[in-house]
Structure formats: structure tokens, C-alpha cells
Length: 453
Length: 174
Image (cartoon, rainbow over the protein chains, first blue to last red):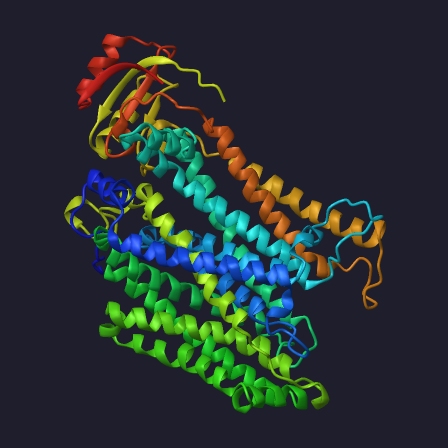
């Protein structure tokens, strides 16, 4: 029988687990955390300024113009929505597959999902140019006669998909947190902490009957989130695929987008987890090198799926015999935006191949660099899809270039400020590893304690 | 929800296998209203405590169907009945285009209703419930038998708890 390696190192007792995971929440923040938080917060303030200008002055501050009407806002929206997918994948799909290693990383990955979806959600709202009218996106009874939204539009499917995804992943995350909030409340030394975490824990008591219902709901949410994850990025891909534009109008888009989303999401989990391990050394026993290695394997696998999609897109463009389709792909690789295509290809298909080697899969510096490269590559993938298809279509007379402005840069860079601020606050205020889920898997890999194999 | 506290007696254990054994024993002794408390779900506890399978999936399924029907109803009524707009010659009742909406509403209603059902089943949110021992959400386990359970006898229960390896027995409310 194959021996399992322990999921939690250091022969922890139940009390050790609680102490370790609650420690970052209960102690005074470190200088490193404060430094990073101030940096992220400054970036967030800059972002708020940029967005205020874009809303106040108008969408014309960004480079979108004829013929490229979709730019940074949509590119970055798809990027952030994609980031979110790994969180739900780890928490839901791996839960259904009974992958016990997920317990150590699920909480933080879900937090990443929630914050990434919040970051993403702003973009479609702002790119309308009149965000104060965004409530028009929802089918509500109104006074303008029976004027309803157009349910035949993929952009409206997106409204439903993204808002459902945001709601369900937030609920899933929060339900997972409830028993852990109760733990922090019970350990609280002052009244404020006790009251706040007491309210967050909803008065959870942890009786056997409660746990029985709780586990069932967790299973149901995992079962419901799994198709939801696939549907969200499928529907995001419909925004493109349902149009008739060469380079967008392809049937490969749904699975290709989903694979890319998982790919970029896992890369972001690895980036964040390497940082968490540095910032909170006690988590090294919970988020072990084995965990990181498994995620790197997933990055490599999905990276190859994405690479396959690039190749098959190219092949089908040639095989279709459609001259516009052929042109778009040759233009993507060798046209004026060829550089972005090659950044995408090298970051997404070449660098992850390093993970064939066990030494690199288990090296923190290597995986950190590769995960960042993957995220750069995946942003460029969305850039390539959006901009290169739009800038040259059927008529050479309507060709043009995307007039990238520094506001575009501000929107892109600033969005990281929002995401990182939320994430850093989460690390300080919430237990970053699920206490109640790690405890039952403590014995895995330790034979003498009667662990399950 | 206002808390209603029940008086009773609680035993506290330090090991997972002991609480499982104790729970089985308590159930076999004829108690039905007892609660076994732990910081995490214990494998085999449902069987030991005689807990029936949760009814929440029925809620999730029913509400999922309601979401599906609601999604169909909404899209059909708004697009084909109340305000039928011809969009590029597409049919008013464009079922394939309505599938994403129906799907998302199925998931949304099913997920939210199952969480609502969990709240109902567990009696939460609840303001400041009594805590038998703060370590119960960390590394200790407890069984609480309320005073109105069948054959409640403090002395007997206390000796039973002690026999089963409880490190502490206390009169409390829950």
C-alpha cells in the first residue's frame, strides 16, 4: 500500500491547531504585514482616484475607441473572474473528489475567490460609462412601460452568472467560517473581540445534530458550486463566442476559458500561499511543500490544456478555410500586437513546463516566479483575445490600434491594490486555514495514530 | 431568535474515541434529547448518536426546481408576453438563450435556501448561547443531557459519565 505523506506536519494536537491558526488573528500585526498593508492601501487609494476620474470625466479617459471598443475594463474583468475560479475549484470540486489536502488551502483560496470576484465585478459596472444607471441591468418592474432587459443577450447572462457566482461563493466561504468564528469567540480575551466574533459566529454551538446538517449543506454547496464554476466562465466566454467576429466566434471558447481560469487561479493561489508561508511561518506546517507541489502539478496540467487550445485554435482557423479567420490568427502572432501573443504563449505554455522536474515543483522561489509569469501570461491572453480580434476585422478601412492611456495602466495596477488590501485584511481578521476542517485530517499519514489510508 | 436555556448535566471528554463510545452508551441508556458537542464533525458520530440523515437536500431540490421554473417563467413572460421585442429576428420565446438564466437561478435559489434551512435546523443566528466550556470549540468534547430527558437522574448520569472516562461533570444550562 502506498504510504500517504502527512497533511499536517509537526505532530500537532487539536489544541496546537487552534493555537497556530488563531495566532495571526490574535497577536499584534508584524512590521512586514503593516508595510505590505500600507503599500496595498496606497495603491487602493490611487485606484479610487483613477476610477473617480473615469466616472467623473468619462470613459474617454481610457483608450477604448473605434475600432477597439472593449479594452482594459473587459480584459481585466475576465482576468479577475478567472482568478476566482481556483478558489471554488479547490473548495468545491476537490471536496467532492474527497481530496483531503484541500483543507489547508481551501479557506484562503475561497477568500481569494471572493475578493477577485469583487474586484472583477466593478469593471463591467464601470465600463458602461454611466455606472449610476447600472441597476438597469437587472429585470426589475419599472415605470417606463413594461421595459425589460434582453434575456437573449450574453451580456445579460453574464449579469446573472457573475452575481450568482459572487453570492454563492461568498455564502460558501462564510458558512465554512462560522465554526471557526465560534472558536475565536471562545478564546477571546476582550469584550469587543468577543462581541464581534460572537456575532459573526451566529451563535454556532457545534452539536452533533448541527454538524450533521452542516456537513450536508457543505456538500450541497460544493455540488452546486461545481457546475456554477464551469458555467460562469463558459458564459463569460459566450460574451465573445456568440458574436460573429473572427477570433471570437469559436466553439472551443467555453472549455478553453474554463481551463485558462483554473490555470490562472491556481497560479494566484500559489503566489499568495508562498507569501502567506513567508509572512506567517506557523502555517508552513499546514500549507506544506506537498500542498504546493500538488498545485504546481495542476498548473502544469491546465497550462498544457491552454497550450493545446492555442494550437487547436490556430489549426481550426487554417482548416476552416475562412480567410478572415485565417487572417486574424496570423495577425495575432505576427501583426502589430504579435509581442503580446508571444508573451502569452511563452508565459503560459513554456515556463510551467519547468514543473516536470520535482526539484522545481518543490522550490518556493521557482514556483513563485512561475506563478507570477502565469498570471502575466493569462492577463495577456485576455488582452490578445479582446484587442487583436477587434483592431483588425473584415474591412481594412476600419482597422486601427488600441490607444492605451495611462488611465488604463492605472485601472489595471490599481485593481491589485483593491484585491491585496482586502486579502491582507482577511489574513489578519479571519482564520486563514479552516480549523474545523484540518482537525479531522490530522492523523492522515501518521500510521501509529490509526489514520485512514 | 431569543435563547431558551435548558438546565441539565454535561460531561467533558478529551479524546475523540471516548466521546464516540460515550455517545453510543448514552443513547443506549434511553436518552433521546442529549447533545454531543465537538469542535469539528466526528466520523461515525451520526450513527453513535442516532441522528437521521439531514432533510435539507429536499429543500435544496425543491427550491432548485422553483428557481428553474422561476427562471423560465421570468424569461418567457418578460420576453414573449409582457414586452415582446424583435431582436434580430430571434424568436420571442428563445429557449436556448434562456437556459443560462434558468440555470443560474436554479443554483442561486437552491444554494441560498439550503443555507436558510441550515439556519433553521440549527436555530441560528442565536444571540450569545450559553457556553458549557470554552474549550469545546477547541480540543474538548462534551455530552449534555437536558433535565427533561427520559429517566433523567443526576447522580446516575454523573456516575455513568465518570465511568465512561469524563474528566469533568458539571451541572449547567444549554
